[in-house]
Amino acid sequence: MIYTKQQIVGSTQVGANAKLSVMGLFGVVETAITECMGTLNIDAITVKREYNAFWVFTKNRIKILKDLGWGESFYVESFVSSLSSAKLVIDTAVKNLQGEIAAYSSCEMCVLDIATGRIRRTSTVGIDDSFVVEQPQMYVEFEKIDDSDIPAVEDVTVRSTNIDFSQHCNNVEYLRFLFNTYSVEELANRPVSEIEVCYINQSYEGDRLTVHKQSSKTCDTLSIKKDGKTVIKCVISF
Image (cartoon, rainbow, N blue to C red; front, side, top):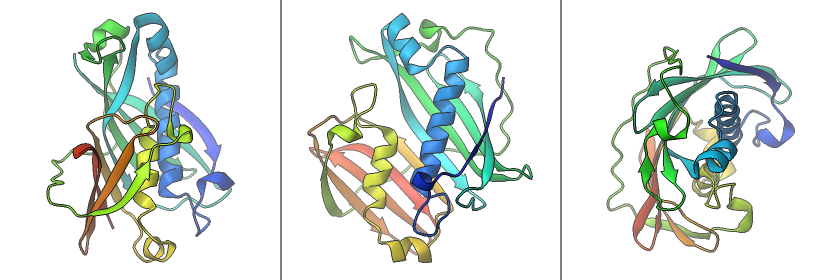
C-alpha cells in the first residue's frame, strides 16, 4: 500500500530563500510517515492505546534533488519498504507535479515497550503477514557515522515546545538544534544535498544537550550529546 497525499509548500515550511527548507522537509516527511502508519493502524496513538508501546526513529537518510518553492504544489508517497521482527522501514518520495522526485527519505524505526523501554517485536503491535512491502523508488543505504573527537560548539536545553506525543524530544527538533549552528549565509552558499541521522538515545524536557560539529569541504559531521553520551549523530552533505 502506497499512501499518497497532495499539498502545497506553506509559508511556515520555507527558509530565507522562499523554498522548502530542510526543517520544512523533515516535517513533511515525518507527517507523511505518521499518516501512512495511521492508514495501517500502527500509528503512535493506536500503538500506545492498544499495545502499551511507542515508536522511535532509529535512522533517517534524506536525499534532496530539486527545490520546491513557496506555494508550489507537490505530493508525497509513503510506503513500507522493509519489515523484520525488530524494525520497520518507511520510504517517502516527495515529488513535484511532473512526477520528478524532489526529495527521498528512507526512515528506519523500532517499537519500544512503555513499561520497560525495551525493543519489542513488530508483530506485537499489530504487524502481521498481511502487510505489503513495496519496492523502493530510490536506493538509499545507511552508513556508519563516526562522531568521535568532534569539538563542542553550542549548548542547548530541551524545552516544552521540543517535546512530542511520546514525551521525549521530537526527532525533527534535533535537526533544529543542528541547523541553528549555521548562519543564513552559510546555508545559502552551501545548499544541502543529503542528510543522514542516527538516533541513539532519547532526551527529555529540561535536559542540557551539547552540540558537536566538525566541518569539511563536502560534508559536516555533527552529534548531540547528553552527559557525554551520544543522543544523535548526523552527516550533512553539500
